[in-house]
Image (cartoon, rainbow, N blue to C red):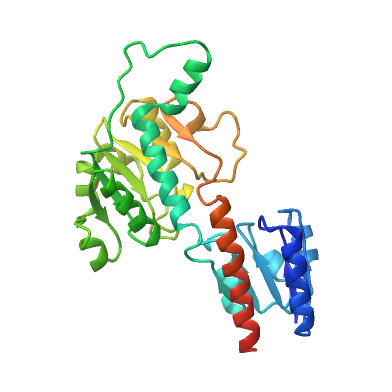
Amino acid sequence: MIIVCVESLGIPQNRFETLKAHYTAMGHSFTYYMDRREDEETLAERMRDADVAVISNIKLTASVLSQCPKLRYLSVAFTGLDHIDLEYCKAHDITVQNAAGYSTTAVSELAVGMMLDLLRNIVTLSELTHQGGSRGTFLGRELRGKTVGIIGTGAIGTATARLLLAFGAKVIAWSRSERPEVKALGVEYMPLETLLQQSDIVSLHVPLNNDTRSLIGEHELQLMKPTALLVNTARGPVCDIAAVGKALVDGRIAGAAFDVFEKEPPLPLDHLLLSTNRCLVTPHVAFATEESFEARGGIVFDHVEEYLKQK
């Protein structure tokens, strides 16, 4: 079979060479690329002859997939699959497998880190100190004792809940399905509207699909406390960005932190979430740690190995 990894995935070249030797010994062809190209022409060129392809969060449309007639398996180095045309894959017998679990710790830690920054203004105060400033009358707030609403209790939402409980926060949750192991932690499930009304901090951990798109909009923001904070490390379109931006500017909520947006950064400088100092923003890095990338490389190529054995 022809196996193609269309980008580096943060994997060093010597590891790719080891993989190449391994697949060659098995009678397969393995091609890898050390750069990341997102344009459809290059993607189609790289994947055109592949039976098996490895890709991360680069958008993969029907237009590209239709130019890859031999493709039968996609090992996706990412948790979410909303960037891939799954309907096309299903219709053309292309198996798609994600790398579930590789970034659970990374994302949950950044979510909690964002909460701490919103409460203590770490970044702002660092900039102030670098400019020769002092505390003045600034007072932060503590995470201990706060009520944090977790929306979505999959692996990442559950990991975030565990961290928050260790900080002494009260954790409540809403999810499409309630998990006994989450309840066993002392987390109380409740309706979404009730969660929004009670939470000091709302943290989003749902996948993007038709049910969750714009899950947090104007109505939901109106339910939140004026002192509440919103943290999004899930997917940008889970929130109505315009509604969030307006809520921040109007002081409807006290602050927000976003690692994900309706498009991948860089963002235009006039983007709504950049127009207010009430929003902490990072360029989609929650998943990106040395440890998670190491784990991811193992997961995606273990999946390729399993597929080859099946065939």
